[in-house]
Length: 224
Image: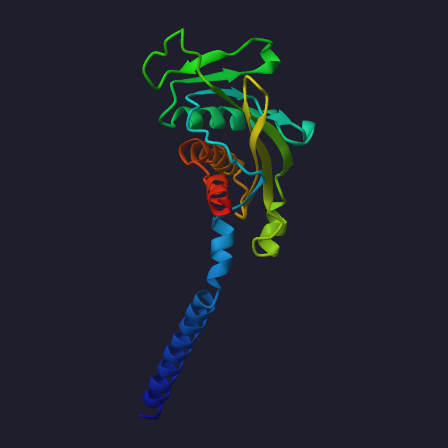
């Protein structure tokens, strides 16, 4: 009788210990701040306009895309530069409302090739206003994955591009924007960072050519 009581007590103690351990593990998992998971798995974008777009760019129906000039030289892998330029062109080609998009690669020494025709044929006697899209790769760092793991998402991979909009005929700068994409994943995914930067570039072009900044009109009206 005494031996059976000891066995029951021993079994109960093991059960209670197991339950306590399970609760502790579950508590530890659920107590991790959600912010860490957002930083580990997300892409962060910071941008600002260097030269705000104030002209009505809705009249531009043709785009001439230049390769982004790499100011980081050999600090950024050549395949990454190529992927970024290809992604920018691809994103721009997906935009609606343009009759022609011409890609210009200065490294080939050619005048450029018309890579997309999204609208009706343009009459030769009616010259189009052409928007030049060019820019620079201003910053790049792949980051150190181990440090991001230790620092809970810090030591980011960073890609910064500067996109410039110009009128082809006059070479006048119509707008400039600085775009920085930070990859906060523990395992750096440069491809996702490049695609995000290209999407932001295309978004800037799209917004600039579909929305007219009426701030000048508003100020003129107030003065009257």
